[in-house]
View 1 (cartoon, rainbow, N blue to C red):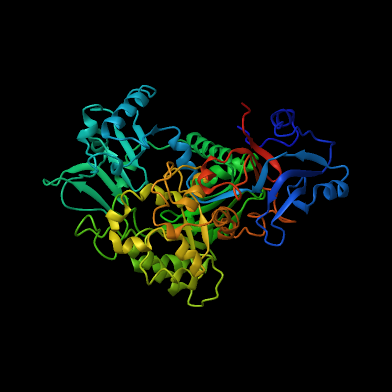
View 2 (tube, rainbow, N blue to C red; view 1 turned 180 degrees about the vertical axis):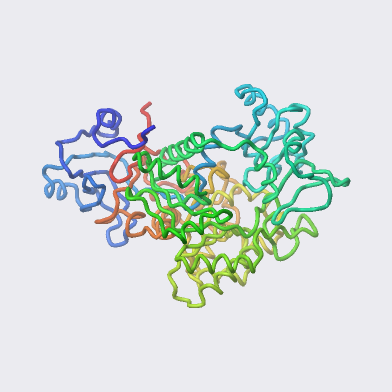
Length: 560
């Protein structure tokens, strides 16, 4: 598969007729793009009507259409008519392989009951060879009438012999049937628990079928290994979905060395349609690989690995996020620390010594506090431009909210997490702690940098939903009226900046991408509407007409 469409191929020309026909004026090494409006995200020149870029994908000039056409008389002309051009959108936290794999497995998102899940699994199983593992992702017990964890018995009647393993929507818990648990070599009964995880058990000490955080590895390790072709296909499918939604870059959170090899193979074949900023998986040997080999950047400019992704706690929905006090709806439970403070201190010190950026998953208020303490020890000098990150930063204690700005820590947050979690989040953490949850406005006003993303496939890969959630804090029907905890809203411009310049900054790429400026890469998106002029309630309905990376069209919306 080749995702990148070379500029002015017959396919590109035929597909590009929209909103005012354009055709290449002549063969040239310069293209002049004109549009009704081009939002540059450059405060010195925020809005223009034309942009010139060369065949290497570098921006040469921005300004008035007539002036640029006069300056480059032999240029190829790309007239986008009444479209709006914005810088390429960057998702600062996603999982490309997970997105691709989700397209090859049973889709369980938005199921309203366990019966719904069994029905979807029955339909999906018809496409599988006999005896193959039945895999799926997306269930969320909070969407069911009983709002309780399921059990293996809920699956056993329909699938008594075929192993079934279903990831929860957040990726921090899994649900197995008895056939899957029987494959695990270790006895799962008793009162023992794995470090950083929890096996849900009944009163007799027997596993119920739900495995939280690191406990899920017990089932994962019993599954047949994925072959290299399937792993590469997952990356291709994930990247293809990303560009179709206007993404020109993704910070891929938790890339293993085999996944890096897959990316490298695609990059070598010029088959990466967007930029990948890989955060190495901290639970493997990727950090040592970077320390031994140096910060990695592919010659093609679309693949980097100079960061490590760590985990300090689990997720709020499965009550694995580490909390300072008990969960409001589960007395005695304070979640899970997946990495103890002393161990985290040692890892971040190692990373600092190798010049590696650290990005740590932290959701609960204790988890965030532990990470901030570790970062403060590693960087006692306040002015350090390390750009270390907290991924999610969902619940922060009042005393910790200003520390991100004080320590120059980037808040890598996902707006759709708030609108997905708002039906039950306050019940989890209580009315006092909810004030520091999903606190985008408080963090931004404190001076912290917000890099926005989606955490796909936990949420949709579509960044328009993130823009909408950030600006409205409502669901698709506009509820609750006025927004949930509306004091934490961002403006449409702030949200767009979070998906462009601030995401680029979080990946050390603000001199290359994130805004449309002379010398930067010609990564941009054509939209049918202006995201900075329409009502915020319409942001989720923006129409992506085309996506360009290095001036090359990598996606064009099909014509009706």
